[in-house]
Image (cartoon, rainbow, N blue to C red; front, top):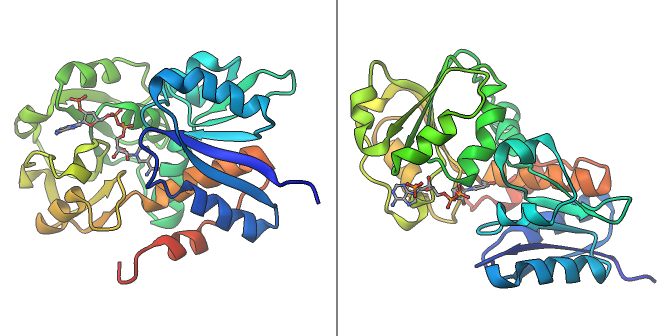
Length: 278
Ligand code: NDP
C-alpha cells in the first residue's frame, strides 16, 4: 500500500498544536488517509524547511506563529485573503510546481460566529482588541458582514491606526488600548479579543462599561482552561463569552477543503476537542 499523503503544521513553538488531532479526525470522517504532523521550525530555518518539505513530496502545510507573514515571500501565487491579511496559513504545491497560499483564519472566524454560534454581525458595533496578524486576517471578512462600526484598540496605537487605514468596507476607527475608556459613547454588541495577551494573563484591565447586557465576547485564543479574556467577559456580565476553539476547527476545515476538495463536518470535531464540562 502506498504511504499516505504527508501534511504538517509549522510554527515555533508548536508542541501544543491541536492541528494534527483535528486533521486526523477530518481524515477519519471523510475516509481520506493522510499523515499530519507538527514540525517545530525556527525562523532562520523557515525557507529551507518549507522547500525541503515539498521537495520530499509533502502535499500541504499549515503555518502558524511566527511564520504566517514571512512565508509570503516563498509563494508564487496567493489568494485575495492572503493579500488582505498580509499573511498565509495554508500552503500547497501549484499545478506549475510553485507554492500557492491562502489564509483561512477569516473564513474560520466568520463560520464559527455565524454557523456555530448563530451570531449576526450586520449593523452591530464591534470592538476588535489587537492589531497583530490575526486581527489583520479577520478584519476584512468581518467588514464584509456589514457591521455598523469597527473600533480597533491596540496596545501600540500606531499598529491599530495602520490597520484602520487599510481600504475598508465599513466605518473603522482606531485607538490605543489605554485610551479605550475615552471612546465609550455606547457599549459594544460584539467584542473580539485578537491579542495574544489572553493566554499569558497579561491582558490589561478593560473598562466594564464596554459591555451591555446583550454584549457577546469572543476570544480568538483557545486553551484547555478558560482564557483570561473569557474569564473577564463572564465577570463583567457578558451575555455570552466564547473562546477560539470553533474558529481553530473551522479554519482547519477550510484548509482541508482546499487540499482535499471536501469540507468536513466541524461540529463533531469541536465536540471531541472541547474539554468535558465546558
Ligand atoms: P501577533 O503576535 O501578530 O499579535 C499580537 C497582538 O497581541 C498585538 O496586537 C499585540 O499588541 C497584542 N499584545 C501582546 N501582548 C499584549 C499585552 N501584554 N497587552 C496588550 N496587548 C498585547 O499574534 P496573532 O495576531 O497571530 O495572534 C493573536 C491571538 O489570536 C493569539 O492568541 C492566537 O492564538 C490567536 N489566533 C487564534 C486563531 C484560531 O484559529 N482560533 C487563529 C489565529 C490566531 P502590540 O501590537 O501593541 O504589540
